[in-house]
Image 1 (cartoon, rainbow, N blue to C red):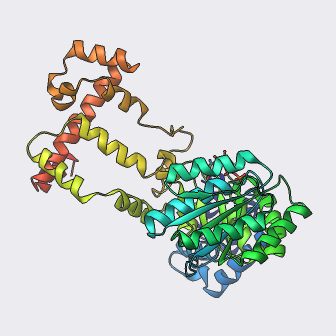
Image 2 (tube, helix red, strand yellow):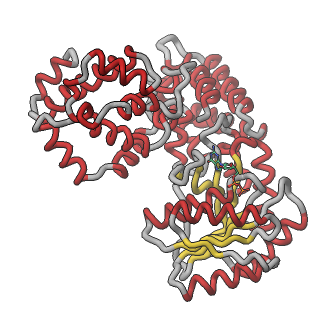
Image 3 (cartoon, rainbow, N blue to C red):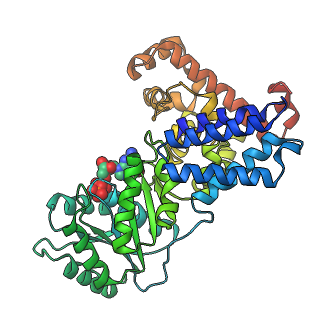
Length: 440
Ligand code: GDP
């Protein structure tokens, strides 16, 4: 996420982070480079200029040059300003209605339907709600089908009325349907066009007026940079929406939209989409995003994701197995599956401070465990339970079956062995042994 911008900002701040003498010239040069980095990331010119001006004023106000660690202080000032620019505090969504009506708006292809599914899933699993998805695109039958597919995926009911070509009446009937069927959230997915046009705006304005949503969300593709900001402005002028959803942040986005949108429309980014899967949704935390942009990682989110996947019952079972020396490849596979549920490897790596820089240029496969899983799947159940029985001829068979090499099988066996030993030590509470093993 935002690799290029992170790298450039890091470079800009590098001089100040060093121990050399810092002068006014260094600071001015750094500010210029920060501005250039923002412009390259497709941040609006005026916003970039105001940003560096604010950083400069703060730096002067806090007498950066006379402090002990001017570099650190500059990084902090940049981080605070970046956080402020992206919205400051976290803004949740209003769920106080009965039912709460949420209207989705945005261009075709922005990710509205996908996000409607993600939001329904999020509200169902994290907020204990019973959502209803509503298909209001009366022009593309495929869009209605798509919402039904999404609904099945997340186990949420979908309301549609294929014979009806009036989105206002569909939305109204859907809300009535929700009331009689005990749905406490109604998510209305609307028709989008490829570009802003008058008819689409009129239509969504009519739906908006008729159903008076508690939340109107504007969905935008982060890959479109400054265009995203312009579209946001057009929609906001008509709808005065409550918040922005930035999708496709998992792609090669430069960051301009995330940084500029709040100050242009003065509405917070509420959620981000980080993948095509229904779980790829995150609450937007401006401060955490600023950390990530500045290469400081996002350990808080990483820990939260790990906690979400943590199952106490499973952990207890695993502990018992380790204690009894019964930890096998099937358990290893379960562990991998849990890690995978936390997100793609690329995404997780991005949350580790400094990892982006350290791994620069190294292509991380999205499915980094593909080979490992193939190898384990090629083992017989007995082999998985008793890895010590895997001799050379078995290894050859496994390599062939999984389309890997004997070296890859050996490597996995070795890793598995080390991991089992380490877990055993942690179990026994023998921390000292563990430290020795790690060279401490
Ligand atoms: P709509 O026309 O606004 O309803 O857009 P869709 O929901 O159909 O999304 C358009 C395309 O973008 C689809 O192929 C989605 O799978 C994809 N998409 C949506 N959100 C994301 C995201 O966060 N990341 C990625 N990589 N793709 C996404």
